[in-house]
Length: 306
Image 1 (tube, rainbow, N blue to C red):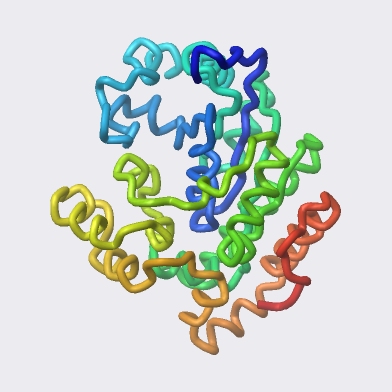
Image 2 (image 1 turned 180 degrees about the horizontal axis):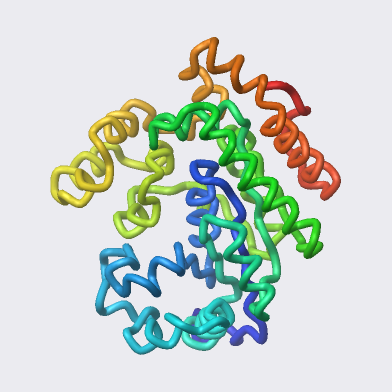
């Protein structure tokens, strides 16, 4: 915000709805790079763990937003999201705040006790790609992964239907293959001015810890030499990311891998298991239907078996 910018009269709160490994961190970072937009990362982690969980790693205890006093104020406050949104408006002049909590039930609880959210973004992935991501990151079986997929997205879809919340559906494959088009569509939905610079993410060390546990975010970033230097300089990366993740980043550097690329990692038997998981495929079809009915299906494929 500059001296010539009028202070906003209202700051819009945006909630990210997504299962793990479906692009929520990537999309949150893209939105958070826009002018006068604050991306909070996981608020429940910050208020529980204190400044050490802010993870911007450039200010930590000196963070001008998450002061110890404000953390204490938010820790047990049922209206913490409204407090954060109001502080972003008054202290930073923000027009939007992007919340990424990782579980739709957080927003459901917040709505029921009076917190204000203006827009939601639903990130989705094919069942097969989700199963592969869970296998790589957590060693889960196909059945375990898809049972979680169904619970998460069935709950998110029910939340959207129940609240009639304005929701933009983002299909990860579309974002991976045409990030500028999808980011512009997303910005238009939430009322954020789009600029191509939002998807031109260079190496910015303050950004990366926000993506803890999601190595995929790194694959599209700028200078690989800077990444290697940062990994060697800061042992934090070795603690957070296993060597196989760092190797994956180096191998896939320069692009966001679309879902079908990840699906190649599943065996034929695993693909058959995904195809037989009718609940997961039904949920995926429901999300595609939601995207179409909301006129937000740009880039989304027709429903098909994974």
